[in-house]
Length: 205
Image 1: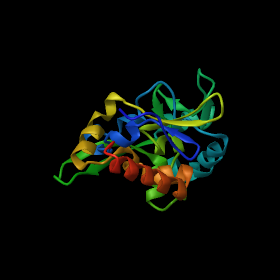
Image 2 (image 1 turned 135 degrees about the vertical axis):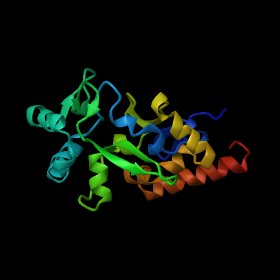
Image 3 (image 1 turned 90 degrees about the vertical axis):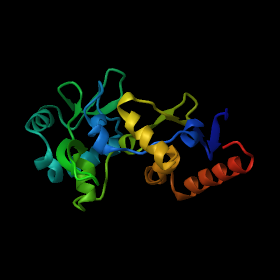
Image 4 (image 1 turned 120 degrees about the horizontal axis):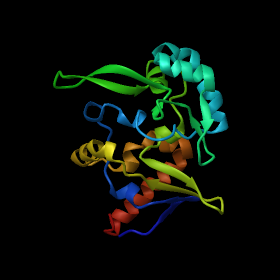
């Protein structure tokens, strides 16, 4: 069992290196966008980004989501005092949209998607989505001494992502390469990869 790891000033749960994960929308249907008791954690800077992107994603949102945004805005404060995106029906993120997804087998699945990410992938915006969503299944926590800790979060709705990750031999840290670089920078990610190689060389991975 590996101990808590450190890359730069960031603490990491060893699960981030040892567990496998790869999203499988055709299996889960994007359930992470519509399950939960609160919206996605956001920063003040990200609230500005959400509001900037609103015009581009408005037509992709459901009438109920638009009504919530008109009434409450794009963010709120949850019971724990954290800033989060507003939600519909007590669970659905207001930025959820719906689309049919074609799979390699030819089967069409009706999926929940992030309207923000969809707009980004379509080239309509330059910002993909809040970092808390982009980093999932890693969750970031700031400790009392100011240190940032990264933990691997297990959620039943993502069991299919774990299965696919194991099939592809895709560790969590590699699946999340782009969001980790966005959050901490290329130099930090290179240091993480160097740590992985060192642990492999010692037979610890």
